[in-house]
Image: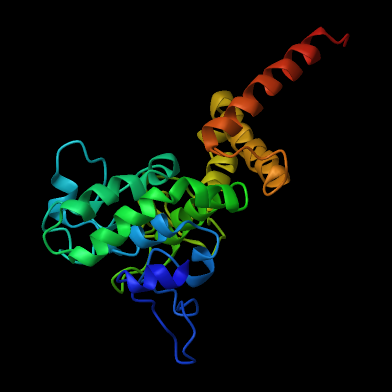
Length: 269
């Protein structure tokens, strides 16, 4: 299937050894890697092969109904570079899973996309459902999970993935964590703390005032970690549904947590 996509215009990034995908450099130049394509349909590989990773410009961020900031990762049509409305920024994994269907509409109407690629896309669309039946269950969702992480952890257009910033934090003492940096003083004056990933943010909130004393926040954090644990146990097993999502996990965890809470209240002290 990968060969079909390559003929459709996908240019794979190569390292000095000639291997597809520049993992060591952390530079993301394509949405689909060679190892991804082996578990995806021709349609998905061919359509997303017409896109390249980009970061949101000020113009992108200013568009109505877009809740993104400058630098937010997304992708654009490699043929028009988004000058014909071909720039896309998805804010949830669930919305990202619709990327191939949404982007196909642009590919088919973009004046810069060669006619032969449009013909191949239309043909691949017809055999999409039959091909999906032959692929491992959950392979498409697994790919979009990886794509979501890559967009947020790799360099795009030569720029590092953005950091998370907690603005105006005021507290005395050292944070003692190399994954965070700040620009405030040690006298407790307000500062901006920078985190390299969301796990560090959650751990900071869990152990730092005023959040660590807030029962609702701690309950939400516990639910998050329970979802991660449960999702990890069933990932790539027969218990994993085809449409695996964060909402599905939360729906499994929350009712179970409420049942356990009720049982604990009924138990004699």
